[in-house]
Image (cartoon, rainbow, N blue to C red; front, side, top):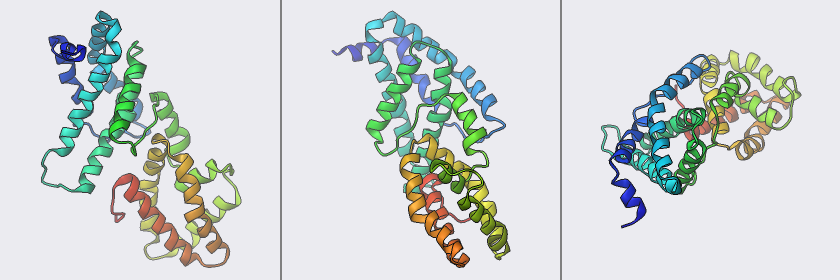
Length: 272
């Protein structure tokens, strides 16, 4: 019998493993906002601290097998996530499953990982790194960054809150806030687009979804691949259309870009 199997039969460790799925499953993201994130993370950390303190004490009893215990814990957690994703539901389908997978991933990135790191336990960093490795072995195209709560809170202040796709891309490319490109896009928004019959609704929709899209791009570590592509494929042609006096073409391109990003990062059809 392997060492892992003997460890798995330890009653204390079995109880710890049984509690881990609750750190992710059934959690919502309603409080992932600028005003509520810090307090909701603190409450989440307090709620789950006991689980990881027990895991720390268990690993202290078997210091030579800590890595083994953490890997088993991560596998158990993600097995529970996979089972939940595959469980029959009234609303089933690829889009629904992708939406629930994204929700679990967001909880892991924005709550579980920061909370464990902020507990200050010896197992903290090894656990979140092992969890990310196990996640990537199962979802290699669904990477994410290891971030602290403070990094996320600062993201609300500097990157995501009222930070829109054009601004995020231009910032990545080294443009300043009053650069020619952003000035042109803002003028297009405030003149042509706002005067279109569907313009105000499109602007409201963009303001609602763009910060969430930017947050996911940043947290998934995709800025280096996504932003240059958005510039070449979408924003630069939009800018050229504006400068050539073809605002209707810019509107078409910009709306098409927004729909594509909604489908990829929010799993939405793109319709309000």
